[in-house]
Image: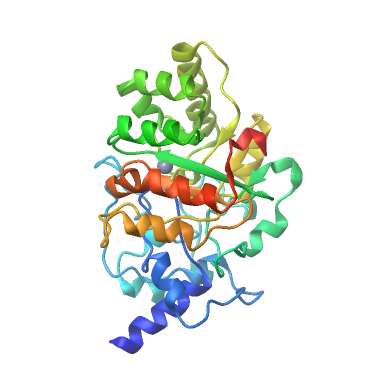
Length: 331
Ligand SMILES: [Zn+2]
């Protein structure tokens, strides 16, 4: 069993598969860091789908709507959450055929975002597909310099909003919120507070569903409906940053999103924060501080109590390391 775990750990070290909301990562990033040596990069031929690791258990994120089925069906690129059992790894990714996308052309092939964690202070490695991304697709996953971009994903419960906003305000820190549209409908005051406090609130779709399983028209509607809702409540135009629910995208969708004027925002740190943390607030603290690097785009889920609990301490520590907490629009 230990050997097996080590093997998993090694795989995880190759690819810290962290995706937005509801994604499963077989090993917390902290565990990956403990493994003897994280590989600096996957073999050039390795497809992202080939690195999908087994998930010991099909844990559902606490931050998702119960009705959501993250990525349970076969798809061109099984995301971490698409492999609820270890047997899923037996499937060679190469044989997987796109099923959900309306047209199965190469650039519509669904991909799940991930990164390869390195030592503290070092910018992670990013998957091969990032090399094919074009500047006009406006994809963001890491910045440069002494800036850290805290991106808070609110696809699930809002949690202790007062405590979270206080931690940000007390430390004079700004954050970037990707709030699902249904949460804004449920609680418009939350959006108003974020905007009033000077945070950036960005487009995370109305329904928080897998965009790779939608038609272009459906994707556009998700985004435009969000824009309308934002304007209705704040009286302002939305700043055009977008995050794919579950980090699932395709090159074609990057074109669609950038065609609407948006930058697509992924991340360079994520955590296993869709489930209770073993060591409480120490886990998010360590996960973030052990991977802190220049231009770090940190993904946190607001639904995690431990994240909110740790937020004040995390911000203080990030600042102590000489970083400014910045808005994506400062990038
Ligand atoms: Zn999300």
